[in-house]
Length: 548
Image 1: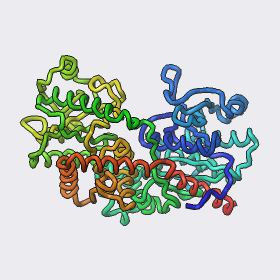
Image 2: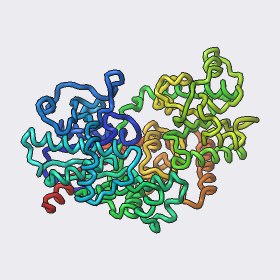
Image 3: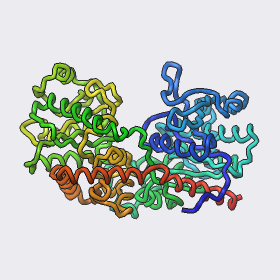
Image 4: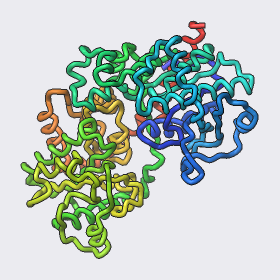
């Protein structure tokens, strides 16, 4: 890849998930920051929403003296917005600005009118979180304008990077007020593509026949889609995180991304080699003790443990496929016992007292409803719970025991009391049967721990592995199953077969697969992927100069 050509004085990156852990974008930014700090010390400024209070402060932000402190004290920001400056408490501790934006609601109508006149953004049918995202984004644009003005920095060597539709208005504000600033817009998943999938419509078989504007009207997504599409077209450089999402953008936003910037990885939370054996032993003890107490089954030490995790998006994350694959495996299984954990946060009520008591007493007695570790508020309506029961996995004798963990595994859930990353080393495999997955950090995290994973060709990570020519457990620790809109049963079959192959593999083969998995994670580190961002920044500056 070509070396950096353009000099950059400052890079701003605005996202709703700066110092605000909500989803996968937090992981992207918080892991990327360390590599950026290594090459551009304090030349990258992250801007996030100040949605915190004294009673509920952000655990990821520390308000300390930084090179921005003088600006924050003396800048006269417009329309009553306020800021706090400090450090984002992640590896690299980059500069962070948290923006209080509530005061901008008063003038939103005038601003929307300006954006309609200037760029054709249609905010007429906005609802839900649209106003909140736009107010923050606009405030972020004002912060960029103020910092440059206060410090006398010429905008000709500045990049402003905006993530997702929630920051689109910030990009348009900068394009309107600071035309010399080079702008980058990244969509991690298009709002209309996600909506199509969320409404149960086939995305891939009809992708080239869909019109994004028409689908936005049909699905009541006009405002968000209009903003996202406009930001993608106005930006000096438009990026996305994978080839699968690039095709989605080309069809639904009508602009193909200029650069694909894959999501890198920092393995700082992976145990050092000398601690891995102990970490795996502790994790397996916990996972097996919970399974034994729930099911009452005699689960030997070599029980095969497989995990699926992530956000609780039943169809998009392939939880339906995973459960059906485990039922298929159970119906055909003559192998050693299998425990299949579904670890996705849902509407949890509380940890099960009977399970907690059994664990404390060391009893492995079996319980009613032996598939749940925590009670649910919506027991009868939860899609995962309903499917487990419909498959008959909650009663009778099984070789495959499915257990649903519907809570955040942050170390104090009341049953495991171990974080997800502390439990992951205990797995023998993971499965992420994704239908809609622009990238896919969960399988990447898995291989970083040396745990082989099964994913699909519809995930960005799966496509990246396939494109590298290293597909297959022995080559990469990753099996990529072909998935389309019309081959559900084949996908279930493929995942069941892939898991069975790991169950039947001998220890020597498993060791080779684990080594291949760890090597794959090294190839996906941020040091390997940051050059794509450098390419995007350089192109943005070149395009900004040409535009001027």
